[in-house]
Amino acid sequence: MKKTYLSFHKLTCIFLTVAMVGCTDLKEDVIDEVLGSNNASPENALSAAYGQLGDATFVDHGNVFALQEYSTDEAMLPTRGSDWGDGGVWRAMHEFTWAPDNSVVTNTWNNLNRGITKSLTAIASANAATNFAQKALFLAEAKGMLAFYTYHTLELYGQAPYRNPLDPNAPVEVRKADVAIDELIKEVESIIPDLANLKEQNTHNARFTKQAAYGLLADMYLNRAVLKDRYAATFKFTEPAVDNNGTDMDKVIYYTTLLIDNPMFQLESNYFKNFDIDNKGRPELIFVVSQAINTQRSSDNDFAYMSMERNQKPSPVNRGTNASCVTPEFYATWDNNHDDPRFARKYQYTDGTWFMNDGTDVSVPATSIVPNSTNQPWFHFNRGMVVGQQYGPILLANGTFDKTADGRIKVSKLVCEKNTTLPMDFTPALNFDNPAQSVFTQAQINRGVRVFKWEFDPERDNGTSNVDVPLYRLGGMYCMRAEANFRKGLTGPALIDINILRTSRTREALYNNAPGVGLLALTEQSLYNEIGFEMYWEMNRRKQMIRFGTFDKAGTAKPASEPFRRIFPIPQSAIDASNTFSQNFKYDE
Image (tube, rainbow, N blue to C red; front, side, top):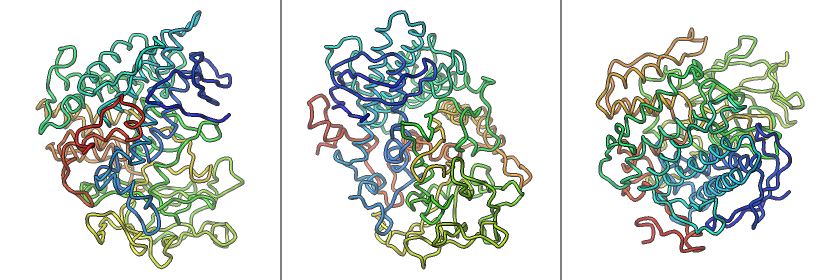
């Protein structure tokens, strides 16, 4: 059944024809959106709202990830020789030259709007249901998803569409961030009594539970001051909360504490387990995008695939794409912290072989097999920040890995696929020929430290993955609570939370499972760095940089920018299609 998408600025009610699904599993099989009806069952409509999280929106590098990461010091996607030029759309995200016609800006807007539309349909469907035992629960979840999509749209674009889902003749309204953030907070707080606790009423962490609501409320309160006055020179983080019960930061502390004190959640000692392809149900994950290979809904491997070089092959049929890297500025924040367990982790095979990736490796066993493959060997690259000369398997002309006489996978010094005379030496320095443009020649495509935080899933070519993408996890709650306490002047409690994160993570057995080392003191700069260590490449950095006043500053291939760049423009296609939206400040000049 072919998917057909609507003109989303109209937010017309849609009819969802879906294969039969379980009432509690909410596993969406096929969706066909047909204009002019609202007869969707509550199960199918809510499934569609959840499904939009994984239809590129929060899993593809060219959507929310691009806006929240490529616009920061944490990630960039430069042009590399003949690759990734694409009319300059990727460079524009880092060089701050994006405009209303930028396709990345437009695609993200459209996908978030689809989430809003599907959530409104789910609300209407649940409300109209009769003799439906889970009506209150489904209605609360649908409202929670509407708030989630709306908040991210407001945070990125300053405006979001809304239409009363209970009135088929209701006009489209435009919600503005400075007013709507308070409305959203009230709405999410109001549905908490009807939401299930995680793992109750057959829920799981890909459903909007009470705990997901606590994470969203903490997020909204932490960023409320920014949404209230986007272009301010300084933000008023300790203003009275929406209900006048304490301040915004008090609310952040309250909601994060509900999650931190919940014994259901535990910090992973192996930090990278949060981002493994078998991370479903891990104890640190609060709210996730559920992904799975071999379903009719697409999944995405982008967060791993984009940073891996084309000659880095997890299996003979897989490769990376030599694209994304970090900036020298972000890499420098890790100075004197390379022994932090979140910086990097080496892989050990079941026979005890460690992949050192330092030139000392000779071979690794071929006994690790890609799941559901025709006996394809699985080469495991190390995780975290990947820098310097790289090593790994060589693909032979017959399509197999080069092996030793006893059948082990040979480990060799790697060169770049598109320049076979260039060693695959990932350099912290970028050194663009034109410092204002993130463009490399074919002789420079090795530059940039890569991020292997997310595990590459080799089961299905280069595109799909079984990894669940965390939207809220316990480590993030510690970061938010630490920041809230710090902004209240409570440096002691903030330092305790940061040190819990640092010391709860441990290194691999090669280093005797040594825990991270705590800090003796906490400054604004060290707090800023620590949030980056914990949350890098998780669609968080742009919000953090705006709050800490670093987003406007100049950096590698990025000029000092004006405050209007703190939000993105409304896509020109939306402006042209309707007079519903007005263009954001200075984007219509």
